[in-house]
Image (cartoon, rainbow, N blue to C red; front, side):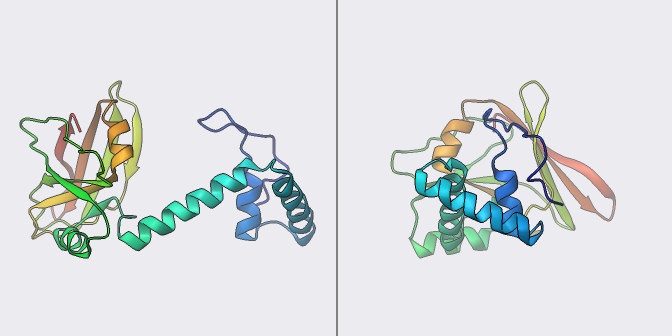
Length: 194
């Protein structure tokens, strides 16, 4: 599908969806005429400094590559992955032991690059873990369909860039964790103040 000729949509920032045609171009969607015309226009705008979406995409790509190289691209980690991350010493991480009975905000010292939250959870026998994040007014903010876990760990680890964790801490959320096992799909935890 070629979205280059659709009416312009607006994203959460209120800017036009300038990434639609760029996404189509990068993915090789559309015909050769579209690709050639878009490429010429894109490079002209880039040279003129009028292609902010290209700068955004390049920055996002660089951030994702950096996170992947440090092993922090995956939001959910196992105990073994946390230990490997700590042993590598490439990133300053703080591990916060979340207490579901007495939730408090984590202390994130200056200079911290990653916040890794250990969430105690008995998931022995689980085949699949999922999580939903809700705003304080009950709106679904994010669905995470495949949480990485090891049933023997007795916990899951949520990994977040420290700056993002600081920002997220200003907005109360509820995280609902679902497990699928032989008994079916059910909620195994509701984490408020997270």
